[in-house]
Image 1 (cartoon, rainbow, N blue to C red):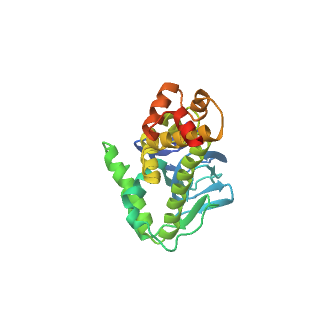
Image 2 (cartoon, rainbow, N blue to C red; image 1 turned 120 degrees about the vertical axis):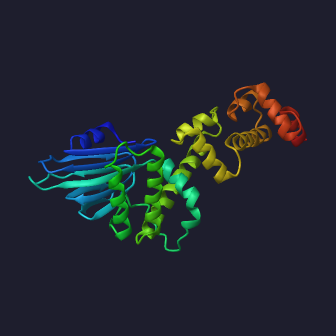
Image 3 (cartoon, one colour; image 1 turned 135 degrees about the horizontal axis):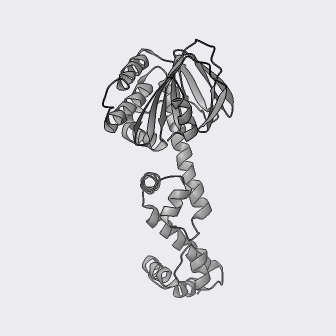
Amino acid sequence: MISEELKAYFERSEVCKILESDQQYIVYYSNTNQEELEKFFIGEHTLMFILKGNKGVVTPNHYYQIEEGEAIFIKKGSILINEKLIQGNQNSGIFIFLKEEFIVEFVDKYQHMLHSSEAMDIKTWGAYQYHMDSWMQVYISSLISYFQVLPLPAPELLSNKLNELLLVLILGQERTYFISFLREILMVRQSAIDTVLQSNIYRNLNVDHLAFLSNKSLSQFKREFKKKYNDSPANWIRIKRLEYSSHLLISTDKSVNDICWESGFSNVSHFCQLFQKQYGTSPLKYRNVIRD
């Protein structure tokens, strides 16, 4: 998804063509008139290909000047700088805005191709700039043809074209850098789940709420959780809460009601049923047996 502000900027270009597939955008733009210096926040992972002219990108640690024939992969959260254009000079290029979920699905599908002993530590990198190799030039030429046909390509064709782009990148001359970026994106997403769980596991929140706090859809949260913990979120969280409640029963004199709430359950009767099923006895009997 691109911001309305950035979309409006592209639409002010002399030539602007936008293709969309499941809220992922491919934008072709071209200008020869004077442009003012402008800055835009980039909210999605983005690939930018400069065909004519140049663009600037600011990440938290670096400024990148991208020239004709160059490309850059930009992690979300960077700033795009539209440089002033000299009258009569052409400025054109292609932007591709990728949803993080699309990248994750790609990695799941092609993870057998992502093993690289040369993977780099790029946690502090906000972008990677490179020259387009021959395969990328062929890809860009074929992509431009998608803007030249009517009716516009179906979303399914565009989705395949985006998959093709990522394949070209992980097989091309810059594969080590791009694979490292993919790995880093996944690590950040996985750590987001860990952080949310650590902060909220004993709060009375359901899986929908935890997915929201992780900035993921429910299906994405469940899929990534299953991959990481080899269990469903609901079952894993229920067991952890019951384990914590058993610890409180042994180590404190708190009432069953208080322990129920403190462990993240909202109904005492339901809590007792779950505890009975897990430990084969009621909470109070469990306390008495362990202490005796």
